[in-house]
Length: 140
Image: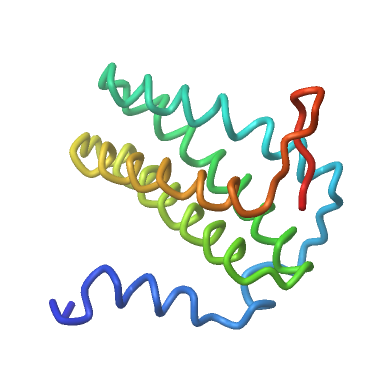
């Protein structure tokens, strides 16, 4: 890969894929909420497996996260929300990279992919969810 293209170029290329190209699946707001509630604890489990050097379980966690983030991307694609689509696609890519690294028992690459994956969450959360007085959230 040309170093001038690098990681930023790869991310920009991934984001250039037409909105409908990633998924045709329709996800309801209720289903999306369930997906998000599964993602949080699973990311924590993935981190713990990375810290423990447990590549086999980390691979399972990352593979499941990849599926969940694809569902998240489908939700935002239906809403045509560009920044959320980009965040979800970045998370799909990071989870896929984590699964591949874990399957190859490459703990360094696994740790890096997990770090990238974790970095995709808060920007989208801050932009697209609102905390309600009872402590729950709703999508903006």
